[in-house]
Length: 348
Length: 271
Image (cartoon, rainbow over all chains, first blue to last red; front, side, top):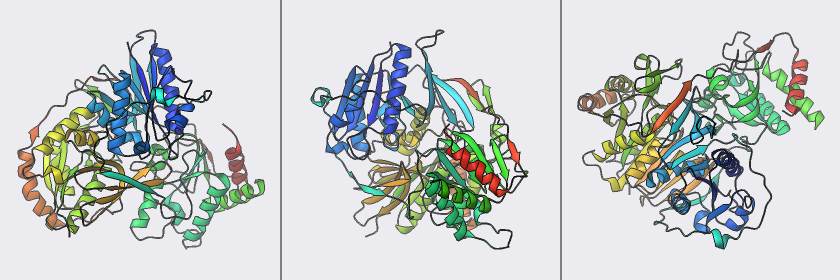
C-alpha cells in the first residue's frame, strides 16, 4: 500500500509556506484520496509553528524541521532536513514543489534514500478503476516539445510538481503544536552561507510569476522603424509603461536579450532572466501577449503553458503564430501599445 | 594568490533546437525519429557551463578543464568538431545512448564513474560544472546525482555568476523565484555548479585551439568506454507531440485604436 509525504518549505519570511508548497499540499491530498493512502505533511521552516498553521487540518500527520539553520535555502541543510522528514514518515510517494529550493536538493535526497525522482511534473494520475495502485506522472521532454506519461515501480518515488498545476491549499488555519511534530536533524558541517538576494540591475522588477498576463517583447522593438531610425528609448518607455499599468510580467525572446551581449541597442531592463523559450523559462500565466516576435521561441516553446494567447506583428505571414496564437493583430506595436497605455491610464 | 582549479564540465548533446522532433517507440523504449541523423549541438546550458569553466581556468594559471560527455561516439565526434574550436579542454567521452528518455539515475551513475576514473583529478579540489537542466530530459537532476555520488555537499543550481576569492572561497549567484538571484558564499571546492546562462557570450571559433583539442579528442573517442543505461523501473506509458492546434484569428484591417480597445477589454476580463 502506498503512503504519501508532501514536503513543503517556508518563504523568505521563514514563517509562512510558499504558494507553491500549498499547491503541492493540494496535489498530495488529491492523490491520497484517490489511492486511499495515508498522508503526511513535512515542513522545513525556521519558524515551523507559524508555517504549519496553514496546513494544520490538511492531513492527519504533520512533521516539521525547524530552526535558524533552515531559514536559508542551502543544499547541505535542506537535504539533511528532507532526508530526516522522509525517515520519520517512511512514505512510498513523496510530492514536493519544483521550487528553486527543493529542486536544488531533492534528487540527492532520493539517491540517499535509495529512491528515484522525476521532476517538472505537470499532472498526476492514479487510483483508476483499472489499477487502483498505479500512479502515473505527466512531464515534458525536449523543452516542452514532447509530452510523456511515466510510471515507476521503484520506491520511494519523489515527484516535483511544477508551479501552477494545482490550486494552493486553502484550508482552515489552526495552531500547530510544533513540539509534538518537530524532528531532530543531524546537520553536516555547513560550508555555505546564504548572504542575501540580489535583483537584476534594473529600475524595477519586471518578472512577476503571479501576474495574469505575460507580455513578451521580441527583437522587432529594437529594429529600424518606418522612419528609418531605431527607437529603443521609446520602446523601453512603452513597455515599462504597459507593465506598470497592467501588472504584467515581462518575457523576452532570446534574440532580444542576446543583443545586449553583442553591444547592440538594447532595452536596459532586460536580462537573461526575462528570456522565454529554449534556453529560458516556460512560465505559466492565464494570458500572454507577444509583440514584435518572429520565431519559434516565444510562440511554441515559451508559450506552452500560457492560456489565452494574442500577438501583435507586422508580418501577416508569420508561420509561427498560426495555430499557436488565438488572435494575431497585423499592426505596428509602437502605435498599438501607445494607445493601450493611454486607455489603461484613463481606466485606472 | 591565484588558485589552480580542477573543473569537470558535464555536457550532453541534443538535437539542434531548429529541428522538428517526432517521438517514436522502439525496442529499447521511446526515442526520436531519425535521431542519429538529426544535426546535434552541445546542450545549451551545459555549453554555458563549459565556457564559464574555460574563462575561469584562463584566469587561474595551472587550471585544467575536462569535458565529460555521454553519447554515441559518432555523434560526439561530430559535435566536438565545432565545440573543440571554442575553448581548451580534455574530453572524457562515454559511449552510450543519445536522447532525453533514458533514466537520469543511470546516466548519473555512468558519468560519475567516468569522473572517478579521470587520472590525476584531485576530487577535493573539484568544481563540477554542468547545465542546471538539459534541453532533452530537462529534469535538472543528473548533475545533482553525480555530485551526490561523488560525495560533494555543496551544490548550486541556476548559477549565473561565480566570483572566486584569493582564499579559495567563492561567491555564487543562483536564480530563484521572482527574477532574483540568491547570493551565497561557499568555503571552496569541492562544489557542484549547475549553470543557467551565465554572463559570457559564445566564444569565437579558434582553429588553433581546435587543432590542439582534437589531438587528444580523437584518441579519447577511440578509447571511450561503452555503457548501457538501465531503465531503473522507469516505464513510459505514452510519448506524444502536443496535439493542441489553435484556430488563429488574423486581424489585418483593424486600426490601432480598435486593436488597443479590444486588447484592454481582453486584459481586463477575468478568465
